[in-house]
Length: 105
Image 1 (cartoon, one colour):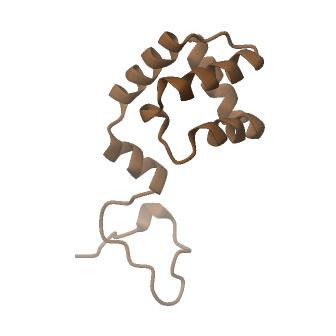
Image 2 (image 1 turned 180 degrees about the vertical axis):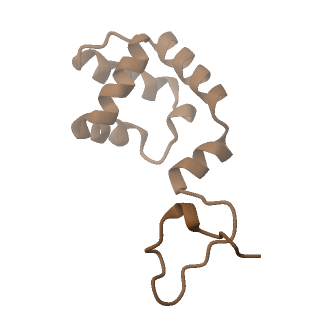
Image 3 (image 1 turned 90 degrees about the vertical axis):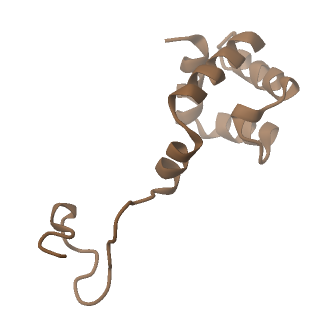
């Protein structure tokens, strides 16, 4: 794993690091971060024991951006479900997911 991937894993597990990155990025997606923002994130990474250069951060983000499209990320982050699932009436939402839509036309 790369140093940036290791740092990312640490950020996911550490609320304080996530808060610091959120403070730097604001509403900006990390894939659209400026060099200045990435440099500040690099300083936080270094404080956390991960010596990540600006070039390594950019390369990592570029490779991650290729892995999932924005639509795929939105579906994962937003919990999008494809198909018609109705949750109405008695017992709504209490059945196993495996029987949703079984026998329905």
